Image (tube, rainbow, N blue to C red):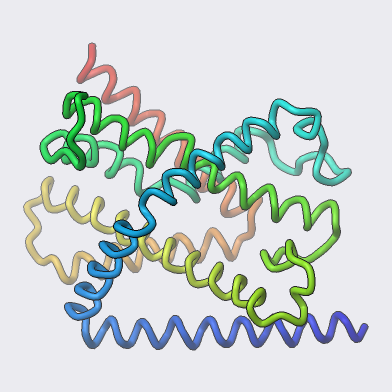
Length: 270
């Protein structure tokens, strides 16, 4: 009972600190959007310059690690004793919608075209091959390997070791180490940033489509309305739970994506 009370207090502290940081950043971004954009761009350039090669090797190692796990005897072990609650199609639909739903419809088409016209590196390969290599890296096995690696860690400690879903549970002495506890804070912040980025991409796509079809020029009001609708659907799906909300909207999302895929293939390829 005491341990549960301690865990509850710690979770409330983590939630409060996360909300405080997110609200502080939101206020700063709202007041100084141009300065924030300049700072983020400069930090991004520095990170790519010093950690770009590390990120490439880390992605490769993640892919190789999961392949070894999958084809080794360890890959046959079940995490937990119960059968999966949802069908394979629904699981794939929820994973796809949460991981790449909004981005891939825009970036998977935009990125290869942009990099074909502006090659990021100079090699013996043609610009077309380089653009496809970069696109496959960002939207292919490497991206899913990062997702899969963290899912494997969380699933093992949640269903086998019977610990909390927090990422710090994968480390020893996480209950007393503030450094390890910061991993949970970083996980929450990066998750929120990822959701905001996905909503931003989705808003841009929908706004661009509406403006192209109806020649609608009031960008500010249109962006606000589209963002509100996306947040509303997201809230309703989360409020209704996984089975009645997230699963259903993810299944619909996959069906719409398949329809769009066959539509483009039929009218552009055939």
